[in-house]
Amino acid sequence: MKDIMPVNGAFEMMALPYDAETLGVISSNTLSFHHGKHLKTYVDNLNKMLSGSGFEGLPLSDVVKRSEGALFNNAGQVLNHTMYFEQFGAANHQPIGKISELINRDFGSVETFQKEFEAKGATLFGSGWVWLSLNAEGRLVITQEANAGNPLRGGLTPLLTFDVWEHAYYLDYQNRRADYLSALWQIIDWSVIDGRL
Image 1 (cartoon, rainbow, N blue to C red):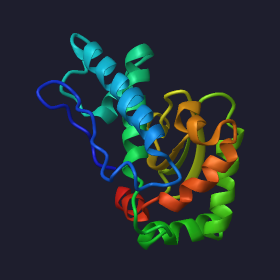
Image 2 (image 1 turned 90 degrees about the vertical axis):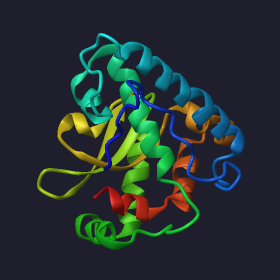
Image 3 (image 1 turned 180 degrees about the horizontal axis):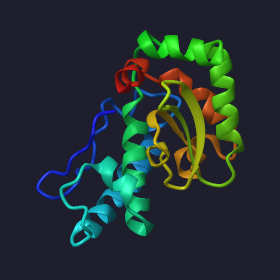
Image 4 (image 1 turned 90 degrees about the horizontal axis):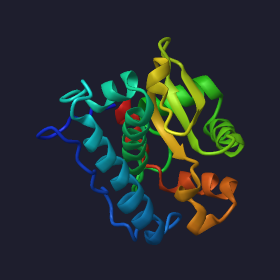
């Protein structure tokens, strides 16, 4: 996972690495709200809170690991959303490279992994995130994180995430969270996930 550094004392809003019209399973309308409004609000709030916090100039991952309260909530949401939006693309929709090897080793097959991942996302109560991460022993684990939670706080290396806050899917899928989770595999660019190893 590459670290995100502040620029001139502030974290910047990430640009989408693809055209908002191209994803299909996530509409441009959802992206305009989710990326353009929700993420922007988290970035703006985080930057307002940085001054005098003791976290000025630190990488975003350090802020997420060490902060508490509102500062953590906004820092966590900036990191989570950045990783979420960066992992989509038009190519490499099947696991490749080292991540493919690890998924098959630790879950038995891609299909078994996807079913378990979707189940964890569908059964997370309330709002939050489902994550695929690497633990200290080099094994893949799936975790549920409430609200702005990130596996970094548990000593894991986050690799892949699905956002299960309603704002991520409600315009396109209404209350059908499971359908949204299943559809996301069509747009994951596994070269991004492999690169995070």
